[in-house]
Structures are given as C-alpha cells and as structure tokens.
Image (cartoon, rainbow, N blue to C red; front, top):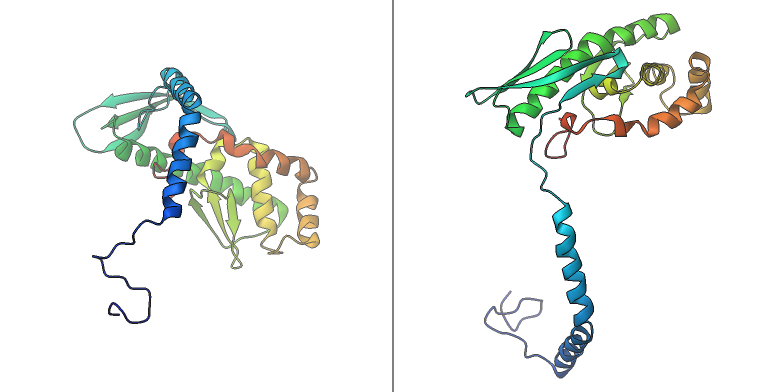
Length: 232
C-alpha cells in the first residue's frame, strides 16, 4: 500500500520526531538509574564474586557407572578413545561397559548409549511385559520400545503398548505397576472408576506406587536424554 493511502504502511525514510513526553520519560529513567547506581554496582560485584563458584559444564561427560535397578544390574563404564568419528558401547565382561570411538563427542556418544539402552529394554522389559500380560490375563497385540520424554509407557486403542526404555532406571515394583497400568488400558482406555478398579485388582497398593512414580524422573540420568532437549 502506498504512502498516504489508508493503512499502516510507513515509508522507511520517515521517522517520527520524538515527543516532549518521551524526553521526559528518558530523563526520569536516568534519574532512577542514578539514584540506584550504588545498589546496581553492588549487585554486579556480588555476581562477579559468585561466578567463581560455578564451573562451565562440559557438553559431554561419560558416566563412570551405569545402574539399571529394574533388572538388578550395574556396570563400571570405561572410555576407550580412537580416531574413528563414531562411538559404540560394548559389554566386554561381566560388570564392565566400554565406550569405543570418539569418546569426547556428544553427537557420537549419546546416541551410542541410547542404542545400548534400547537394546537392554528390548531384551529385558519386553519379556517382563509378556509375563505380566500372561499372569493377569490381559493380552496385548504388539509392543514397542521408545524413549518418551514425559511418559513411562502408553497403550493405544489397538492394544499396542509402548514402553519407555528409561523404565530400566526404576525399581522392579514401579516397572510392574506401569505395565499393569498400561495393560488395564487394553480393557478400559480412559481413567474412569472402572479402569482404576481393574488396576486395583492386579495391584492393590497402586496409590502408593503412583505417588512414588511421580517422583521417579529424578532417577533418570542426564546421558539418557537427548542433548537438544527432545527425546527421539
């Protein structure tokens, strides 16, 4: 729309002349800053003094030890650097995990640990779900292993169960409760009174477990999260 016609367009070459009111506001702001200058300087000095207590966090730091309470296993963790651009996690002996490759790269190491964690979840969590399904009489159609950011697990209306690989960081009783919860969704999708009756029948202390579960995310180590804050 051309200049002079109706609308909000303004020629880039034109600038509004500052009004007397804006000048008054600027002087008022300068007066406030002048009166508070000693307080501002003291606050800046305190910030500089406190800065020495904070050390920069490295972009990637390999864990020294990994524990998976859900299956009662733990490993010492050893970095084995080499010149290759990738990284891989290998269990070389009982109780020892080795990280081979570019061990200082977040982009290489974090995905390698994620792949290892997913393999462990497939190996251990899926059989646990199958056993609980059999003993409770609540069948499901298929199971997936993912690394959800905000859910421990989920169940679709088609009776497909998705398990979060990070369940491995929980205690066995919490893992069992999560799986019972999702298997009950194969019968009732919503969290209705009927649904909770199904949960209670299979897990009488579900209220206590549910309260503990709400605090369980603090048990998830940083390395299991994606570096950009998004879970793949």
